[in-house]
Image (tube, rainbow, N blue to C red):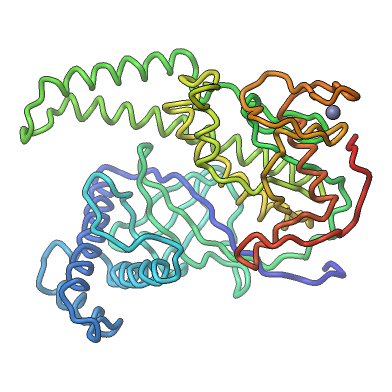
Length: 426
Ligand SMILES: [Zn+2]
C-alpha cells in the first residue's frame, strides 16, 4: 500500500463481442425496443401536463407499455428502467445548459444501444487468454475479446468490480462497454518536466520541447481508393433510386462497406490518440494545453478569403471529421491520464499563441495559420522555426506566467502570477 493511501477510480472499457447470428438478432431487437421506448417516453412527456411529468408517472407508463406492446417485452425490465433514467437525465442536462433538449430517436440516425445497469447480472469470466464470457439478459451467454484485465472472479470484491455495461453497436458490430470501478494506490506526484502542447495545423500534436506526435493517414492507400470507389458507386446507385422506393439490398451492402471502412479509420485514430496521450501522461508531470474551441480549428483549415488555407481538401471530409472531434477527446484523455499518473493538466487562454514569437515575445499582427515556417517580424530577433512548436512554447510560457484558466469557475478566470520565469522559453 502506498503512503499516499488509496483512491477509487472509475473507467470504461469497450470489448468487441463475437455474437452468433441468432444472438445478434436478439440484440438488434432489444436495441430497437429501447429506442421505441425512448420515443414513447418522449411522446408521453410532450402530451402530459407539466405537473404530471414525474418519474413515478413515467415509470407506470413504461410498465403499462411493456404489457400492452408485444415487441417491447424483448427489452429486459432493467434496461427499460435505464432508458427512463437516461431520458430524465437528458432533461436535467438540458436544464443545466449542458445539452439540447431530448428529441425522438430516428431509426438510422441513432446509435443502437441497450443498457445493462447491474454488473452482477453480467457474470463475467475469463475463459481463455484472449476471450472472456458474459451474460447478456435475454440474449444469453456471449464471448468477447479479452484485451484488458477486468476485476472478475477472485479479483472482484466490493471495491473492485464491474458496475455495469452497455451494449453498443457500430459498423464493426456489437460491443460491450463495461463500467469498472477499482480501488488503487494514489500515484506519487509526477516529478516529470512541464510541457506545452499545441494542436497543430501542420503537425497533429506539437510539444514545446520540439517533439512532434505524428500519424500517417488512417487508411492505407488501397483502403482509401476502395472507400472512394464505394462512395462513387453509392452516389451512382442513389441517382437511380426513386424517393419512397425501398433501398436495394446491393445499395445497403455498399453503405455497410462504407460505414465499415469509416469505422476502421475512426478506430485507428482513437487508438493513436490513446497511445499518444498515455505516452505524454507518463513522461510529463505538468501538461499545458490551449483552451481551444473546435470550430476555430475547422475554420483555420479553411482559412479566410484573403488567406485561404492550405491542403483544405485533405483536411476536409473524413480526415477533418476525425480531427475535428479529436482535440476535445485528446484533452479529455489527457485530463484523466495525467491524474492517473500523478501529473496535472492546465488550460491557458488561446489568443496570440500562434502569433507570438516564443524567442522574444514579439507579437506579429495578422493570421499566422497555415504557414510552413514561423518568422519573427521583430527586426532585433528574426527567429524562425516550426509554427506549431512555437505555439506550444507560447502555451507553456503562459502557464509559467500564471495565466491559467480555472475550470471550476465555469468561465475564464485568470489566476495571476503563480510563478514567473523569464519570458524566453528554451
Ligand atoms: Zn522574435
